Length: 558
Image: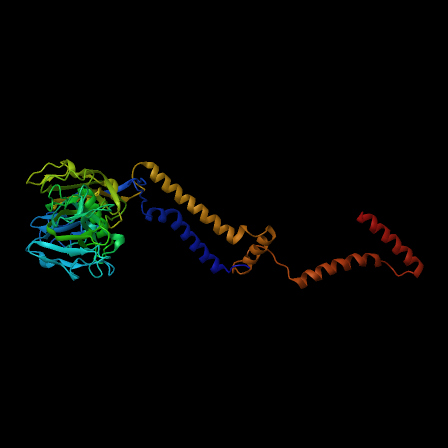
């Protein structure tokens, strides 16, 4: 399909324009590509603007209002850290805390203890078939007289009694650590001589012991359990079993003293185990227990009188401190505008700030530090808090500032963060406050204005070559589209056709078809007439004449 002249002309102009755009203008308009390390393509500028030490953040001295210019942020356990502000500074707080809990059995607290038994199958201490136990100013007590011949007395030789108090803590203990614990309890017991012990001869006056295996004894114990006294989550922390109480030779019918207790860590472990399964991790129960065993030492007629068994006092005291979780962080941040312009190159970025800690950093966390972030890009080196030496005044984080130019990219909105990162699990019994002020970020950069005609000459030469190349390419494309793509015969016809539409004589004589036909026809007639010239002859002579002329004509053609 052939293009009309006007369309061809327009097509050529458009093609030339697109060629110039692609090869000349577009490369100049494309932005300079930056890599992550701030390298860039280099062009020779005809002009450049320098911006030196431009303060790139607002409110560096934390004047009110600090927010929303400066924004606090916490990652990790939000109970471990916090933020605050005070005139001229922003604070990052590590929330330490120490608490103490004391559980007592004494005159003042007796009302908080309740008697109970863990099961309906338990035999309750009694005297003459009457339950005999209680709580008074002397503590938790019970008494039991076992008479084998008493009505129903035979199976009542293993009575048991319990008392409990529920303890509630004001915090979730999963976020605290028990750091120390002490426990003590005073027990007291009084019995009659008919309590049988090793080396006793009489079950009671005048009655010899005739059978024994373990003799008679009493047990005192203390347990820590859940609120519902779940046996699977009940742990014994103190225990005492009498052996010689009631011994006739020693006349040992009364005792009083401290109950035997487990070691500190065992009790802490028991308490932690119970708190772990509590829904709120803050409730547990202390259980006191007294158990009596009356061995049948005289067939059919044994008597054992446990006159008075007491838990007189109890004191469970423990301290617990805030547990700081590893990888928790707290920061102050500011969102900053992008560095934009024509072909920007960052030449420097310096961050300075002052900080102080209200005390020397805890030895329990050697690896915690102050970090600097640009967006999610961390800057090294860091400031280790353990290296800080206490001073009431602010000190420079770095006297020369931090060169963070490698972390800043042009054409990017970015956030600067000063973060305290807690790198260890540790306990903290008091708050630690880290304060920052005088945060200054100075950025220096160049803005280039490209001119390829400027020195050195190679840029101008390349530009001229590019123009000629583009022109030649455009010319070729136009010539190809309008002429060269056609075969030679077609080109001649197209050229001839062009001449027909011109008003000026093209200089070529054109013979009409009718005239050309007449001329050719007349030439043929002229050749034929030669055979007929001369006087008329008879038929024979004429035939011979014609044959001779025909032969001569053929020879002449050859």
